[in-house]
Image (tube, rainbow, N blue to C red; front, side, top):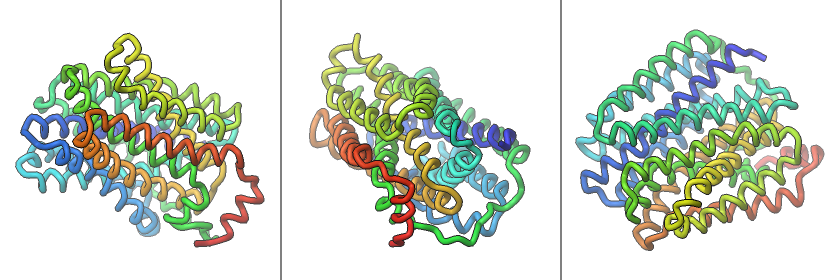
Length: 391
């Protein structure tokens, strides 16, 4: 295992998580203070997802023409520019939208390639733990964003300066750790395309869609939902931190468990718990003694759905199929992040508790596909046959 590359990839994804966790709620709260509507906040919150969707179509071309180090330097440079200029972007919505699109594009390339490279580095018997560590690094730094936001306030410039400094360190880390070589592209055919991944692994697709939906909605709209039901702004930001703290703290135990039990059954169990907590969220707001531990559990199982999807992808695919699967994950992440704020923002406009209903429905969709996958987990021969049937 290339330990230096693994450490570099872990630090790079940590910075991506920090920037996402800091800027999504910051932008939402600043727009709310400026008098923007819930739908406008939802649209702006969804724009980074559009950039992530575009990145899925660019990754293969980037890998063919650029070295790994150059790709990462360009991606993180684009992200850093979008953060440095963010204060300027609030002058008009189109300027803000352009900067958020830049951030999504840079993050998308970094996440897609990072997940592929880390999965390639994993030995099978430790795949659950290493992918869980990757997810923990992303979420751990993502948690810092809302935590510092509640401490410094949405109008403070210090948070954006700190994120910019972290991107500077990430660029230095990339130079020192990421090889300046090109990604190997063997000549064997890919078993599916971006759209065909849903036919091959529908439960994994729904797992990625659910978590990207969940991630964007919790970061951008949970503070708005909570403040709309009488919760103070600082406490609402803390709720986001608690959710992602649960995600961060429990991914390594879940990864350890995934290396020892049947992974599709564990995937299904996480979805059922997430759906039940989503349905109970309006009641939990009135039961403070139970709210906080349930937010921790919600973060744990929601993050587990995504981590286990990555583990199962690495278990089932290799070579160019693995790269294509992770590009599909990037596209699905963008779709979920785009749909999440839009649907939830509209649902919040239509009903007081539209946000938890939207989360529960999305979790229910995943549970349906995961139940089917759990009942009929494909054998290696069946998977090979599915991959041979190209779309």
